[in-house]
Amino acid sequence: MTSLDQHLELLLRELAPQVLGAVIRRFRDFSAAEDAVQDALLAAATQWPVDGAPDNPRGWLIHVASRRMIDRVRSEAARRRRETVASKEPRQVAPSEKDDTLILLFMCCHPALTTPSAIALTLRAVGGLTTAQIASAFLVPEATMAQRISRAKQSIKASGVPFRLPGPQERALRLRAVLHVLYLIFSEGYTSSDGSQLERPELSGEAIRLTRAVYSFLPDDGEVAGLLALMLLTDARRPARTGPGGELIPLTEQDRALWDQEKIREGVALVTSALSKGSIGAYQLQAAIAAVHDEAARAEDTDWPQILALYELLRRMSDNPMVALSYAVAAAMVNGPSHGLGLLDALDSDQRMANHHRLAAVRAHLLEMKGDRQAAVTNYLAAAARATNLPERNYLLTQAARLQESPTASSIDPGCDP
Image 1: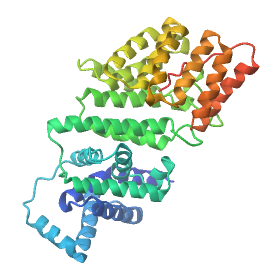
Image 2: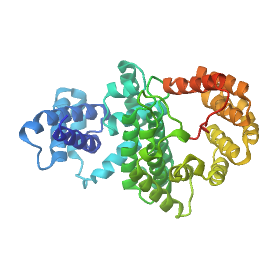
Image 3: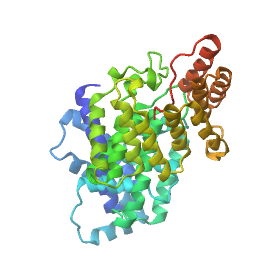
Image 4: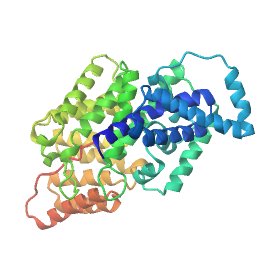
Protein backbone atom coordinates (compact mmCIF):
# COMPACT_ATOMS: atom_id res chain seq x y z
CA MET A 1 0.00 0.00 0.00
CA THR A 2 1.45 3.37 -1.01
CA SER A 3 1.62 6.33 1.35
CA LEU A 4 -1.11 7.99 -0.74
CA ASP A 5 -3.37 4.96 -0.32
CA GLN A 6 -2.69 4.93 3.43
CA HIS A 7 -3.49 8.64 3.68
CA LEU A 8 -6.75 8.13 1.79
CA GLU A 9 -7.72 5.19 4.02
CA LEU A 10 -7.06 7.22 7.18
CA LEU A 11 -8.99 10.19 5.80
CA LEU A 12 -12.02 8.08 4.91
CA ARG A 13 -11.96 6.33 8.28
CA GLU A 14 -11.88 9.68 10.07
CA LEU A 15 -14.68 11.14 7.95
CA ALA A 16 -16.96 8.07 8.00
CA PRO A 17 -18.61 8.68 11.42
CA GLN A 18 -18.95 12.40 10.71
CA VAL A 19 -20.72 11.72 7.41
CA LEU A 20 -22.86 8.97 8.93
CA GLY A 21 -23.94 11.32 11.71
CA ALA A 22 -24.93 14.02 9.22
CA VAL A 23 -26.95 11.60 7.10
CA ILE A 24 -28.68 10.04 10.11
CA ARG A 25 -29.56 13.50 11.35
CA ARG A 26 -31.34 14.31 8.09
CA PHE A 27 -32.99 11.00 7.20
CA ARG A 28 -33.29 9.33 10.65
CA ASP A 29 -32.67 5.78 9.50
CA PHE A 30 -29.49 4.28 10.94
CA SER A 31 -29.35 1.16 8.79
CA ALA A 32 -30.18 2.82 5.46
CA ALA A 33 -27.87 5.74 6.23
CA GLU A 34 -24.98 3.39 6.89
CA ASP A 35 -25.54 1.65 3.56
CA ALA A 36 -25.60 5.00 1.77
CA VAL A 37 -22.41 6.15 3.49
CA GLN A 38 -20.66 2.90 2.58
CA ASP A 39 -21.63 3.53 -1.06
CA ALA A 40 -20.20 7.04 -0.82
CA LEU A 41 -16.97 5.79 0.74
CA LEU A 42 -16.61 3.19 -1.98
CA ALA A 43 -17.15 5.86 -4.63
CA ALA A 44 -14.51 8.04 -3.00
CA ALA A 45 -12.02 5.19 -2.80
CA THR A 46 -12.55 4.59 -6.51
CA GLN A 47 -12.68 8.15 -7.81
CA TRP A 48 -10.35 10.20 -5.61
CA PRO A 49 -7.11 8.34 -6.48
CA VAL A 50 -7.87 9.14 -10.15
CA ASP A 51 -9.48 12.58 -10.02
CA GLY A 52 -7.94 13.85 -6.78
CA ALA A 53 -9.70 14.51 -3.49
CA PRO A 54 -12.27 17.35 -3.55
CA ASP A 55 -11.67 20.60 -1.69
CA ASN A 56 -14.34 19.61 0.83
CA PRO A 57 -14.10 15.79 1.25
CA ARG A 58 -16.71 15.67 4.03
CA GLY A 59 -19.21 17.70 2.03
CA TRP A 60 -18.60 15.53 -1.04
CA LEU A 61 -19.28 12.35 0.93
CA ILE A 62 -22.40 13.81 2.56
CA HIS A 63 -23.70 14.91 -0.84
CA VAL A 64 -23.15 11.49 -2.44
CA ALA A 65 -24.60 9.62 0.54
CA SER A 66 -27.61 11.95 0.63
CA ARG A 67 -28.20 11.35 -3.08
CA ARG A 68 -28.20 7.61 -2.38
CA MET A 69 -30.72 8.14 0.40
CA ILE A 70 -32.95 10.32 -1.78
CA ASP A 71 -32.90 7.67 -4.49
CA ARG A 72 -33.92 5.09 -1.89
CA VAL A 73 -36.66 7.37 -0.55
CA ARG A 74 -38.06 7.95 -4.00
CA SER A 75 -38.09 4.25 -4.83
CA GLU A 76 -39.90 3.16 -1.70
CA ALA A 77 -43.30 4.47 -0.75
CA ALA A 78 -42.55 4.09 2.93
CA ARG A 79 -39.65 6.49 2.55
CA ARG A 80 -41.55 9.21 0.67
CA ARG A 81 -43.28 10.40 3.81
CA ARG A 82 -39.99 10.61 5.68
CA GLU A 83 -38.44 12.70 2.90
CA THR A 84 -41.42 15.07 2.91
CA VAL A 85 -41.27 15.55 6.67
CA ALA A 86 -37.54 16.17 6.51
CA SER A 87 -37.91 18.69 3.70
CA LYS A 88 -40.47 20.74 5.67
CA GLU A 89 -38.41 20.98 8.82
CA PRO A 90 -36.56 24.25 9.35
CA ARG A 91 -32.87 24.00 8.72
CA GLN A 92 -30.81 23.80 11.87
CA VAL A 93 -27.34 25.14 12.33
CA ALA A 94 -25.03 22.32 11.31
CA PRO A 95 -23.31 20.75 14.32
CA SER A 96 -19.56 20.47 14.40
CA GLU A 97 -17.93 17.44 12.85
CA LYS A 98 -16.71 16.37 16.29
CA ASP A 99 -20.26 16.53 17.68
CA ASP A 100 -21.53 14.08 15.05
CA THR A 101 -18.81 11.58 15.90
CA LEU A 102 -19.48 11.90 19.63
CA ILE A 103 -23.26 11.58 19.17
CA LEU A 104 -22.75 8.47 17.07
CA LEU A 105 -20.47 6.94 19.71
CA PHE A 106 -23.03 7.62 22.45
CA MET A 107 -25.75 6.12 20.25
CA CYS A 108 -23.75 2.95 19.62
CA CYS A 109 -23.33 2.52 23.38
CA HIS A 110 -27.03 2.97 24.07
CA PRO A 111 -28.36 1.20 27.20
CA ALA A 112 -30.81 -0.73 25.00
CA LEU A 113 -27.90 -2.73 23.59
CA THR A 114 -26.02 -5.61 25.13
CA THR A 115 -22.29 -5.11 25.60
CA PRO A 116 -21.33 -7.44 22.68
CA SER A 117 -23.76 -5.60 20.39
CA ALA A 118 -22.47 -2.20 21.52
CA ILE A 119 -18.89 -3.26 20.83
CA ALA A 120 -19.75 -4.59 17.37
CA LEU A 121 -21.80 -1.53 16.39
CA THR A 122 -19.14 0.86 17.69
CA LEU A 123 -16.44 -0.82 15.63
CA ARG A 124 -18.69 -0.87 12.56
CA ALA A 125 -20.23 2.60 12.63
CA VAL A 126 -17.62 4.69 14.43
CA GLY A 127 -14.45 2.67 13.92
CA GLY A 128 -15.02 2.04 10.24
CA LEU A 129 -14.15 -1.68 10.41
CA THR A 130 -15.94 -3.99 8.02
CA THR A 131 -18.26 -6.69 9.29
CA ALA A 132 -15.74 -9.29 8.12
CA GLN A 133 -12.93 -7.61 10.11
CA ILE A 134 -15.03 -7.49 13.27
CA ALA A 135 -16.12 -11.11 12.83
CA SER A 136 -12.52 -12.18 12.39
CA ALA A 137 -11.42 -10.28 15.49
CA PHE A 138 -14.05 -11.99 17.65
CA LEU A 139 -13.73 -15.38 15.96
CA VAL A 140 -17.34 -15.70 14.81
CA PRO A 141 -18.73 -16.24 11.30
CA GLU A 142 -19.32 -13.08 9.30
CA ALA A 143 -23.03 -13.94 8.99
CA THR A 144 -23.30 -14.15 12.78
CA MET A 145 -21.65 -10.77 13.24
CA ALA A 146 -23.83 -9.25 10.52
CA GLN A 147 -26.93 -10.45 12.38
CA ARG A 148 -25.60 -9.03 15.66
CA ILE A 149 -24.99 -5.63 14.09
CA SER A 150 -28.35 -5.67 12.35
CA ARG A 151 -30.15 -6.46 15.62
CA ALA A 152 -28.24 -3.64 17.30
CA LYS A 153 -29.43 -1.16 14.66
CA GLN A 154 -33.00 -2.36 15.03
CA SER A 155 -32.77 -2.00 18.82
CA ILE A 156 -31.66 1.60 18.46
CA LYS A 157 -34.44 2.27 15.97
CA ALA A 158 -37.04 0.69 18.26
CA SER A 159 -35.78 2.71 21.24
CA GLY A 160 -36.69 5.93 19.43
CA VAL A 161 -33.56 7.67 20.70
CA PRO A 162 -33.10 10.99 18.87
CA PHE A 163 -29.82 11.71 17.11
CA ARG A 164 -28.46 14.30 19.51
CA LEU A 165 -26.11 14.50 22.44
CA PRO A 166 -27.87 13.35 25.62
CA GLY A 167 -28.41 15.91 28.35
CA PRO A 168 -25.82 16.35 31.12
CA GLN A 169 -27.35 13.80 33.51
CA GLU A 170 -27.94 11.14 30.85
CA ARG A 171 -24.57 11.88 29.26
CA ALA A 172 -22.83 11.20 32.56
CA LEU A 173 -24.54 7.82 32.76
CA ARG A 174 -23.94 6.97 29.11
CA LEU A 175 -20.31 8.09 29.25
CA ARG A 176 -19.57 5.23 31.63
CA ALA A 177 -20.96 2.82 29.06
CA VAL A 178 -18.93 4.45 26.28
CA LEU A 179 -15.71 4.19 28.26
CA HIS A 180 -16.48 0.60 29.26
CA VAL A 181 -17.02 -0.42 25.64
CA LEU A 182 -13.78 1.27 24.57
CA TYR A 183 -11.94 -0.43 27.46
CA LEU A 184 -13.29 -3.83 26.41
CA ILE A 185 -12.27 -3.25 22.79
CA PHE A 186 -8.75 -2.33 23.90
CA SER A 187 -8.52 -5.31 26.25
CA GLU A 188 -9.55 -7.74 23.53
CA GLY A 189 -6.95 -6.23 21.24
CA TYR A 190 -4.17 -6.27 23.81
CA THR A 191 -4.77 -9.85 24.97
CA SER A 192 -7.14 -11.81 22.76
CA SER A 193 -9.68 -13.90 24.61
CA ASP A 194 -9.21 -16.74 22.14
CA GLY A 195 -7.18 -17.89 19.17
CA SER A 196 -3.57 -18.43 18.14
CA GLN A 197 -2.35 -14.82 18.49
CA LEU A 198 -1.66 -13.08 21.78
CA GLU A 199 -2.78 -9.70 20.43
CA ARG A 200 -5.03 -8.10 17.83
CA PRO A 201 -3.29 -4.73 17.35
CA GLU A 202 -5.98 -3.44 15.00
CA LEU A 203 -8.51 -3.56 17.85
CA SER A 204 -6.30 -1.98 20.51
CA GLY A 205 -5.22 0.67 18.00
CA GLU A 206 -8.82 1.45 17.11
CA ALA A 207 -9.74 1.70 20.81
CA ILE A 208 -6.95 4.24 21.33
CA ARG A 209 -8.05 6.24 18.28
CA LEU A 210 -11.67 6.39 19.45
CA THR A 211 -10.70 7.24 23.03
CA ARG A 212 -8.56 10.07 21.69
CA ALA A 213 -11.66 11.33 19.90
CA VAL A 214 -13.70 11.27 23.12
CA TYR A 215 -10.85 13.01 24.95
CA SER A 216 -10.80 15.77 22.32
CA PHE A 217 -14.51 16.37 23.08
CA LEU A 218 -14.22 16.08 26.87
CA PRO A 219 -10.66 17.10 27.80
CA ASP A 220 -11.63 18.05 31.35
CA ASP A 221 -13.16 14.68 32.24
CA GLY A 222 -10.69 12.87 34.48
CA GLU A 223 -11.89 9.38 33.66
CA VAL A 224 -11.69 9.95 29.90
CA ALA A 225 -8.10 11.14 30.37
CA GLY A 226 -7.45 8.22 32.72
CA LEU A 227 -8.68 5.66 30.20
CA LEU A 228 -6.60 7.15 27.40
CA ALA A 229 -3.56 7.19 29.68
CA LEU A 230 -4.16 3.57 30.71
CA MET A 231 -4.35 2.48 27.08
CA LEU A 232 -1.19 4.35 26.09
CA LEU A 233 0.84 3.18 29.09
CA THR A 234 -0.24 -0.40 28.54
CA ASP A 235 0.16 -0.40 24.76
CA ALA A 236 3.64 1.09 25.15
CA ARG A 237 4.85 -2.36 26.25
CA ARG A 238 3.44 -4.16 23.22
CA PRO A 239 6.71 -4.25 21.18
CA ALA A 240 8.34 -6.28 23.95
CA ARG A 241 5.44 -8.61 24.82
CA THR A 242 6.06 -11.26 22.19
CA GLY A 243 9.11 -13.08 20.86
CA PRO A 244 10.02 -13.95 17.25
CA GLY A 245 7.52 -16.80 17.18
CA GLY A 246 4.69 -14.86 18.78
CA GLU A 247 5.38 -16.37 22.19
CA LEU A 248 4.40 -14.44 25.31
CA ILE A 249 7.20 -12.63 27.15
CA PRO A 250 6.17 -11.78 30.74
CA LEU A 251 6.54 -8.30 32.14
CA THR A 252 9.55 -9.16 34.29
CA GLU A 253 11.50 -10.51 31.31
CA GLN A 254 10.67 -7.87 28.70
CA ASP A 255 13.37 -5.75 27.09
CA ARG A 256 12.27 -2.37 28.40
CA ALA A 257 14.39 -0.60 25.81
CA LEU A 258 11.71 -1.68 23.32
CA TRP A 259 8.91 0.07 25.18
CA ASP A 260 7.43 3.07 23.39
CA GLN A 261 8.76 6.00 25.40
CA GLU A 262 6.63 8.56 23.57
CA LYS A 263 3.45 6.76 24.62
CA ILE A 264 4.77 6.47 28.16
CA ARG A 265 5.49 10.20 28.37
CA GLU A 266 2.06 11.06 27.00
CA GLY A 267 0.31 8.61 29.31
CA VAL A 268 2.17 9.82 32.40
CA ALA A 269 1.36 13.44 31.57
CA LEU A 270 -2.33 12.62 31.08
CA VAL A 271 -2.77 10.70 34.32
CA THR A 272 -0.70 13.20 36.32
CA SER A 273 -2.91 16.04 35.11
CA ALA A 274 -6.12 14.07 35.73
CA LEU A 275 -5.16 13.09 39.28
CA SER A 276 -4.28 16.67 40.13
CA LYS A 277 -7.89 17.76 39.50
CA GLY A 278 -9.14 16.04 42.65
CA SER A 279 -11.89 13.65 41.47
CA ILE A 280 -10.25 10.24 41.23
CA GLY A 281 -11.82 7.36 39.31
CA ALA A 282 -11.02 3.74 38.55
CA TYR A 283 -9.42 4.36 35.16
CA GLN A 284 -7.15 7.01 36.63
CA LEU A 285 -5.99 4.61 39.34
CA GLN A 286 -5.33 1.85 36.82
CA ALA A 287 -3.38 4.31 34.70
CA ALA A 288 -1.35 5.37 37.74
CA ILE A 289 -0.48 1.72 38.41
CA ALA A 290 0.55 1.24 34.78
CA ALA A 291 2.71 4.38 35.05
CA VAL A 292 4.56 3.00 38.08
CA HIS A 293 5.36 -0.16 36.11
CA ASP A 294 6.44 1.78 33.03
CA GLU A 295 8.68 4.19 34.93
CA ALA A 296 10.72 1.38 36.52
CA ALA A 297 13.98 1.00 34.59
CA ARG A 298 14.18 -2.66 35.69
CA ALA A 299 11.60 -5.09 37.01
CA GLU A 300 13.38 -5.15 40.38
CA ASP A 301 13.06 -1.35 40.60
CA THR A 302 9.26 -1.50 40.59
CA ASP A 303 7.73 0.45 43.48
CA TRP A 304 5.45 -2.30 44.77
CA PRO A 305 4.39 -0.47 47.97
CA GLN A 306 3.03 2.36 45.82
CA ILE A 307 1.26 -0.11 43.54
CA LEU A 308 -0.24 -1.85 46.57
CA ALA A 309 -1.54 1.47 47.91
CA LEU A 310 -3.12 2.30 44.55
CA TYR A 311 -4.76 -1.13 44.34
CA GLU A 312 -6.10 -0.63 47.85
CA LEU A 313 -7.87 2.54 46.69
CA LEU A 314 -9.10 0.79 43.55
CA ARG A 315 -10.39 -2.17 45.55
CA ARG A 316 -12.45 0.15 47.75
CA MET A 317 -14.32 1.59 44.77
CA SER A 318 -14.73 -1.63 42.77
CA ASP A 319 -15.84 -5.18 43.47
CA ASN A 320 -14.18 -6.40 40.26
CA PRO A 321 -12.52 -9.77 41.02
CA MET A 322 -9.65 -8.94 38.64
CA VAL A 323 -8.83 -5.96 40.86
CA ALA A 324 -8.83 -8.25 43.89
CA LEU A 325 -6.56 -10.66 42.00
CA SER A 326 -4.07 -7.93 41.15
CA TYR A 327 -4.24 -6.62 44.71
CA ALA A 328 -3.24 -10.07 45.95
CA VAL A 329 -0.20 -10.04 43.64
CA ALA A 330 0.88 -6.60 44.85
CA ALA A 331 0.38 -7.68 48.47
CA ALA A 332 2.54 -10.74 47.84
CA MET A 333 5.30 -8.62 46.35
CA VAL A 334 5.28 -6.36 49.44
CA ASN A 335 4.39 -8.73 52.29
CA GLY A 336 5.41 -12.12 50.95
CA PRO A 337 3.71 -14.91 48.96
CA SER A 338 1.86 -16.43 51.92
CA HIS A 339 -0.02 -13.17 52.43
CA GLY A 340 -0.97 -13.05 48.77
CA LEU A 341 -2.09 -16.68 48.74
CA GLY A 342 -4.36 -16.01 51.70
CA LEU A 343 -6.06 -13.23 49.77
CA LEU A 344 -6.68 -15.56 46.83
CA ASP A 345 -8.78 -17.92 48.94
CA ALA A 346 -11.67 -15.45 48.97
CA LEU A 347 -11.76 -15.52 45.16
CA ASP A 348 -12.27 -19.29 44.99
CA SER A 349 -15.96 -18.86 45.83
CA ASP A 350 -16.50 -15.94 43.43
CA GLN A 351 -18.55 -17.30 40.54
CA ARG A 352 -17.14 -14.63 38.24
CA MET A 353 -13.73 -16.28 38.59
CA ALA A 354 -15.01 -19.83 38.12
CA ASN A 355 -12.79 -21.63 35.60
CA HIS A 356 -10.81 -18.45 34.87
CA HIS A 357 -7.21 -19.30 34.09
CA ARG A 358 -5.73 -16.19 35.69
CA LEU A 359 -6.69 -17.19 39.23
CA ALA A 360 -4.85 -20.51 38.88
CA ALA A 361 -1.94 -18.78 37.10
CA VAL A 362 -1.46 -16.23 39.89
CA ARG A 363 -1.72 -18.93 42.52
CA ALA A 364 0.96 -20.90 40.66
CA HIS A 365 3.27 -17.86 40.59
CA LEU A 366 2.82 -17.23 44.31
CA LEU A 367 3.31 -20.88 45.19
CA GLU A 368 6.54 -20.83 43.20
CA MET A 369 7.64 -17.73 45.10
CA LYS A 370 6.90 -19.60 48.32
CA GLY A 371 8.96 -22.60 47.17
CA ASP A 372 6.11 -25.11 46.82
CA ARG A 373 7.15 -26.33 43.38
CA GLN A 374 4.78 -29.29 43.06
CA ALA A 375 1.72 -27.25 43.95
CA ALA A 376 2.91 -24.56 41.54
CA VAL A 377 3.17 -27.13 38.72
CA THR A 378 -0.35 -28.36 39.46
CA ASN A 379 -1.74 -24.85 39.24
CA TYR A 380 0.24 -23.94 36.11
CA LEU A 381 -1.24 -26.99 34.41
CA ALA A 382 -4.74 -26.14 35.67
CA ALA A 383 -4.36 -22.61 34.35
CA ALA A 384 -3.12 -23.89 30.97
CA ALA A 385 -6.12 -26.20 30.69
CA ARG A 386 -8.46 -23.23 31.16
CA ALA A 387 -6.62 -20.74 28.92
CA THR A 388 -8.21 -20.19 25.51
CA ASN A 389 -5.45 -18.00 24.09
CA LEU A 390 -2.73 -20.24 22.63
CA PRO A 391 0.34 -18.11 23.52
CA GLU A 392 -0.90 -17.78 27.11
CA ARG A 393 -1.52 -21.53 27.27
CA ASN A 394 1.93 -22.29 25.88
CA TYR A 395 3.55 -19.93 28.38
CA LEU A 396 1.81 -21.62 31.30
CA LEU A 397 2.78 -25.08 30.06
CA THR A 398 6.37 -23.89 29.69
CA GLN A 399 6.40 -22.68 33.29
CA ALA A 400 5.13 -26.06 34.50
CA ALA A 401 7.74 -27.91 32.43
CA ARG A 402 10.52 -25.63 33.71
CA LEU A 403 9.70 -26.44 37.33
CA GLN A 404 9.47 -30.15 36.60
CA GLU A 405 12.81 -30.27 34.80
CA SER A 406 14.96 -27.60 36.47
CA PRO A 407 16.33 -28.04 40.00
CA THR A 408 16.28 -24.27 40.57
CA ALA A 409 13.54 -21.75 39.93
CA SER A 410 14.12 -18.93 37.48
CA SER A 411 12.61 -15.47 37.58
CA ILE A 412 8.84 -15.44 37.47
CA ASP A 413 6.22 -13.04 36.31
CA PRO A 414 3.92 -11.75 39.04
CA GLY A 415 1.07 -11.63 36.57
CA CYS A 416 0.54 -7.88 36.64
CA ASP A 417 0.89 -7.04 32.96
CA PRO A 418 -2.57 -5.53 32.32
